[in-house]
Image 1: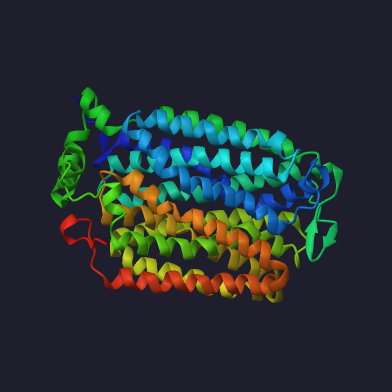
Image 2: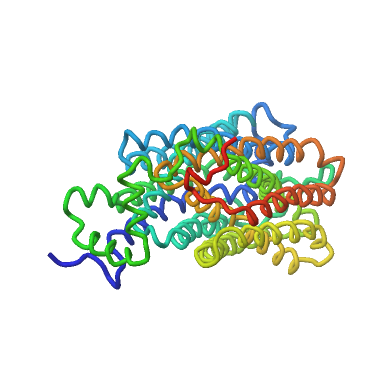
Length: 463
């Protein structure tokens, strides 16, 4: 039987990674929120039935609602993978987040709260199932290249906003109109020609996401199922070849043994390392939440060119994609410890100096936003690898979901800080406070750096 690989790479695995990347591409909608915020907030103020006094600091709760629900539902919904085929879980998740975007056509015309429920909650429920299971599906095929595979898929996650931001802006604001209403240094659109297009954009995006998610799932194949069915002619040989580096042992251990060093969710919750990782993600997440929700409204205070601001958002997405590849590659080469410390340092420096961009003009704003996109989202390439190294592969989806519950806390804290402190602290104080909070994640990352933890139960620090 002919081998189904090329240069040691299983072709069916490469196609599966492509399918996973298509699904995750759609989830990159979350990174369009900073670009979408001015349009959505302006529409709510001018066209909604119940929320005509909403502010930018308030609408950050929409993205926060998404983070909260994704963090809450991820460990719960990922348990479905134990009973339902992975591809079905991903498809249900893909259709659910597509539906959440599409029905925002109706909810945005009614109120701020209903918009949170559709664009935030329903979207997040689908994402919380589709994202981690897609990652697990992909790394099953390439157990020795976890960092690279996760980096590639997360590059699609972050990089998709390059195309999506252009679609959104060109569809909603084809005439490159600038906000024409200034209230307390917040700039809003009131032009009818622009506002009329806002709800239809959600229908467009929902349709695109549903189609791409379906195609992505059709391209996937679970390597375990394929091997059991006997239709993976090159898979066994490929695993044997990679096994010279110790990967076959890891794969066999992950798939066939209960007592293999992998920690169950309950065991994971009893370890000190889990809470340190959780706190690292929490403190850095506050900074990420504030930055992505407000960088465009902040830019509008000194840049009156909506096309340029949309272009910045798109190139920040490219920087995000390159960052995911870079950080994933660096973890494979140097381990996550020094990479995590470096990433957090870069995030803190660029966020603390973001306020200088209003004096440096368009060029500096462009560079700083892209640098923050490059550095900040690397955490999403590193976290899955940390979860695998410390807690093992067997219960990865659920354990990663447990770490992701930090989003509940940082979502609430980030949104509360923004809505309650923005008017008092101003843009400068808000971004400096955000950078200060990231210092906590830096100090905690040093603990991870100097402490030698592996996933083996016998070496775990149990509370």
